[in-house]
Length: 498
Image (cartoon, rainbow, N blue to C red; front, top):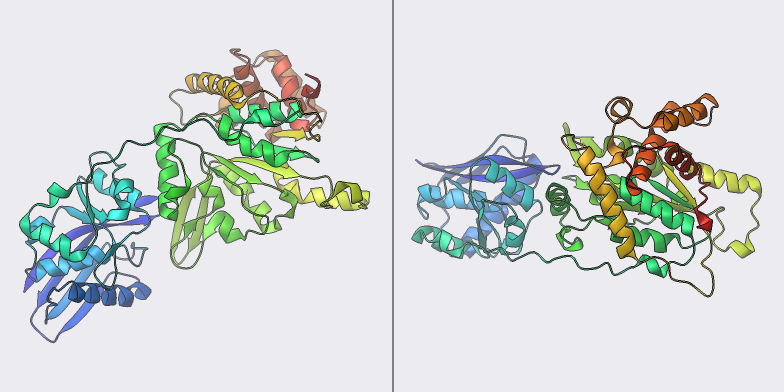
């Protein structure tokens, strides 16, 4: 009887978990038994591993083979363990010295010809290995750059099973370590706010939302998409922790090529998107949806009333908790979803305003579809058609500098707390630790007494007042900040005439 063991990893949500892969070869009738995997994964894994070993000109053990995956039931992906299973079998059969795989992590799908194919979720899997003290990881060549983003990890790229076996036999595995390239420095945004003429109120609303992380609603006929597309360009670069979270989400989704390091992501799903596409899910292993792919960035809903009621209602929870929970098959998978929502809506469902024949009732019913989200949207702005001839507005670089300065003031004030923007600060801390000036509080309380604000919207408007104070460099919100915040909340901001 011969025994060998190695390590692999599974990813649940965006969290990696180490797995032990044990292989045992014993005398008896030839057979291959795989223990510890979900039933749908067992047969494909066994067939791929056997074909890959044979087509790599390696001998398949003509004995009783037992492979055990521990802990049982955690493994979610059907192909990422292929390489670890194959290596453990070959080590137990004597093709590879068992001691050379004992402290190495193996990740990769095997093709029937022995090629090692890329898999999703490599970054969080390698991060879990590094936390556990496993520093050497073997990954598919196409995933080497992704794995190399983990500090303290020695990344070994592999293209074929036969080549990997030769390296393990010779003990020269570390000679093939991958050297991570220097990440590119984000350049200037391609889309500039200077392209948007007029619409001073909407531009100011965009700046305030970027500075405080607040949600935005753009109403009316105007350049809503132009403004939303330029919101990404005035947001500050992501810090290291936020950039890693964004990368891990896109790693699990297999969409790393769609992000730029350090740049907040932006996703604009179509209004026909299903709830699974928005929130995540799918058959087999759940994948993150659009709102998780917009984590630490912008989620833009154009023609927001056209989205299904399931999607609009479902957004309420993630906007409060900043995460998506997908439950099923005895497991709850969590994906982060701290995004800034930007919605655009016309006054009626007519695609061409000049030919509108909608009655007031039709218009009201159209906008009433957004009622489930309106109490969570802090800033509203009325759009206007761009004037002609167009006079360029402020460029993105100028607005981004003010946003960055405001964010730095908020970061200094929130140092030592888990929050990064004013929109994240809980109501209790706004009443105790971060107190506005008394005149500002009295003004907002008078609106609550008059029924114009609820206690929940009082908190949201107060957060908005803090952002306005940060933008003008004040230490605390004053009554003027509270008044401007009320105008932005109601959509009656007077900045159009600035």
